[in-house]
Image (cartoon, rainbow, N blue to C red):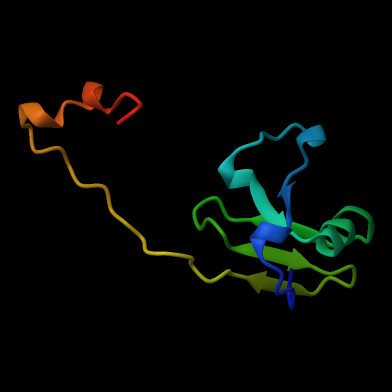
Length: 99
């Protein structure tokens, strides 16, 4: 929520579009909200939308109709998957736990 600096570790996982309204529990429909922000979203007429093409970006609309965009800072390095080289040693079947 705009101005909230609580970490995701201390927050609730919230459905952007409520599960009760027919949406799914999937990464494109989830966000981390602290308890206060979760209650404001649920009971105080704040609304939040999430652009499926820009994950992590949330548009909050206040009860008065003002819109605030919140984009959290990325956490950790962004790692690109490397393609398999085709060697016999790269057989995905060898990755069965324990590794």
